[in-house]
Image (tube, rainbow, N blue to C red):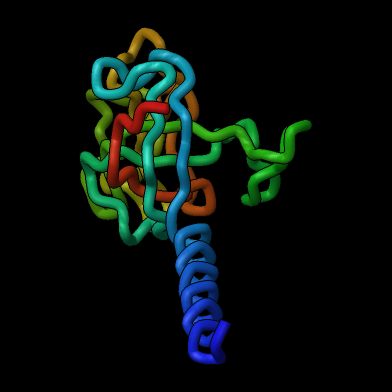
Length: 155
């Protein structure tokens, strides 16, 4: 192969590697387990999420978060398979929004009238099957992993 051919191959490999590293750092593919987001998402669906901080989340976004039970000292803990417990929920209220005591009575026991900075209220679309802010109250910022950008990717 001529030198120019090797240069082209090297450039393509570098570009592909760079693209893969970028995607791994900025995107995540998550499988839906359970019925908490029906009818929006069903068990077996896969979603593509863009990794964002809490500031990138808007009320109404479908988000990927670390389950509160999988958090220790504000950081995700790893299960036996090396992954933190992940949940897919809808962001119902973000910092500065009114506290939704009508949907989350547990928060009515708190003094604030607005969702405090660094916190989020998340709810499943299918309440009878969802573990969410109705049980644990606010979700802290370190638990937020990303916003779903492409729902229902089938295997």
